[in-house]
Image 1 (tube, helix red, strand yellow):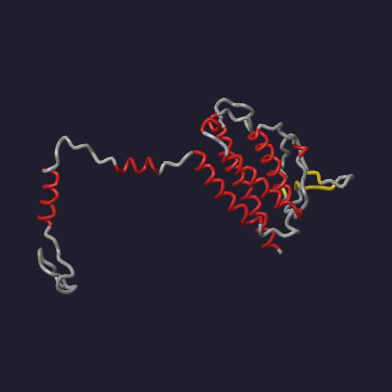
Image 2 (image 1 turned 30 degrees about the vertical axis):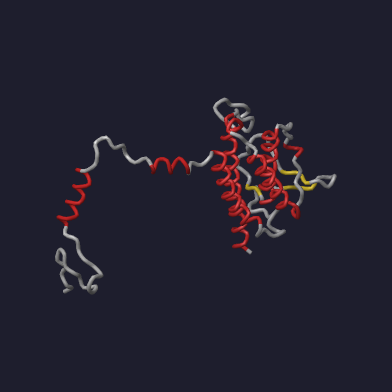
Length: 226
């Protein structure tokens, strides 16, 4: 049985190393602090001021989230092999195909088919390049390009293509002011008054996260089957 420590006595850690304080003294000390506090004294607001000083700007928070999402996507982009891009995971599949002129053309239908085709990694990267390029066009005030104008650069250039879009989007985000973030978003909701440019930036993060998960899952499944 261990040694018992009485109020005001030294415990079993050696002289002067641990002295138990009587509960009665702790309570009395606490009550004295309350009794002597001036009734006119205002609550300490240092914590509130500290939180205000650390408040994160909307743009900075969106940028932080974007950098996090990009790091997850880039993890898989840097590990793709040439055979990954157009590996078809199912019989019903959307991919990129060479036309008679030697250009890559993505499979597409204006209405979502049933069953929904499983896209290849290459098709997903083209899709990211399409919606991201159009978003940047809107953010920069340029005439938005049509889907058919967004060309797939090929397996060897696909990753660098996305890196370039990332740099362009980061620069566009950095230039946004509070007034810019409050403007009605021109895309992808087509000037819905309930959606602002801040919503558009948040949508980019969410859409990119979804596509990152799709690319990562396809890469892992193919690697497991190899």
